[in-house]
Length: 196
Image 1 (cartoon, one colour):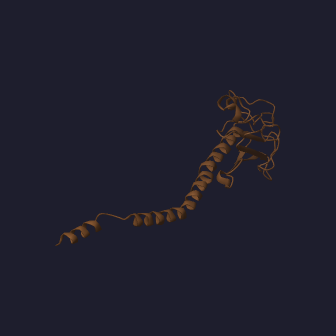
Image 2: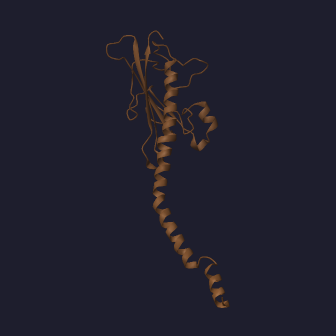
Image 3: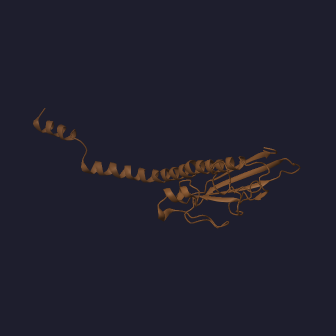
């Protein structure tokens, strides 16, 4: 083998040229740009239908548990405030028939709001742990407070033909979906019997 042919073989085996590298990177960027929208859709769906939907379900369940602790005939407990030492304040509607399970049509005393951390808006715990700029104030009637993130509404009704059953339905939703996605909504419904 001649010296010239050895040098040609060594040069051919040395690696990629700059043009080949640029061409390969261009193809890689085109493929990545094509896959990027799929990744964004996956992140949006995971946040809205995974994380936020789970949180709305958790908060709806919390409200349902609070309502189920009230006696069947309770018509004075304020279910819009947290349970304090096992006693509900007596300035509300208790389990009086009324309310709405439509978040777009809340009824006074059958709605409450939570901040992004799940603290009841206007509660002492929300005011202590949230920075001043991000605090949500107490709602006034059905007017939502500033900086609310979760809304819970509930309805108490008597199923047709019954005298000792109340159906309680709680709906929890969010102020806005992640990435302009659909709002997460969770609805729970139970029957409560008298005298319990």
